[in-house]
Image (cartoon, rainbow, N blue to C red; front, side, top):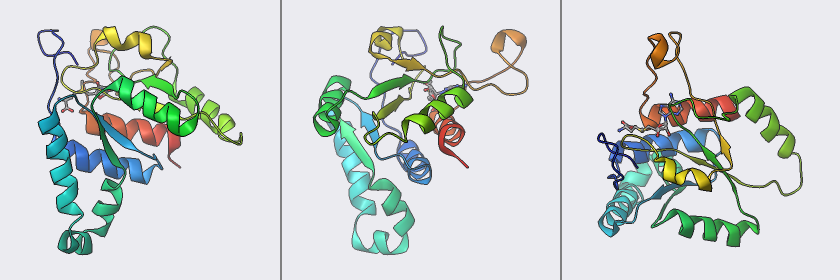
Length: 184
Ligand SMILES: C[S@@+](CC[C@H](N)C(=O)[O-])C[C@H]1O[C@@H](n2cnc3c(N)ncnc32)[C@H](O)[C@@H]1O
């Protein structure tokens, strides 16, 4: 990820993101919500959060939270994650980038939704891996790993150059994008 100075850094996992994005994933039928970080202590943190909500009293009082969190996975690297998905699905998933900036070749949500619906009718559709950033967003050095780019989400005031504002939290961006692609 980039930091505020444009340098490449490893960001920290946010507890709130784990809970909120897991619920959005469960709501919109996403099979796995995968947090990628090379830092082992962050893996422990995620395991501790998941372990807490998987214990008997929490599970009993918050079964919906437990159900959503059961889709959370952690991986140490993006290449390790890709290798696992290729092993499990027998095909490389389509890597889809999300970004608040207007990157070249961005596809609209309605076009990609229509495409996914058509592809979903095939017997074994290629899995799709939608990538979200943290910090100040995903660095361009990641772009060679990307197959598709989704257009940015804008509000009524449009792009920043036009006076608009579209720097959403990753939680909000994930919920909006999943709704646009898979919502009713
Ligand atoms: C850059 S991070 C910001 C992290 C921030 N620290 C937070 O509170 O979540 C937000 C990520 O959400 C997605 N995102 C944010 N705003 C977006 C927009 N307008 N359109 C598309 N994706 C967006 C991108 O994946 C981006 O990398």
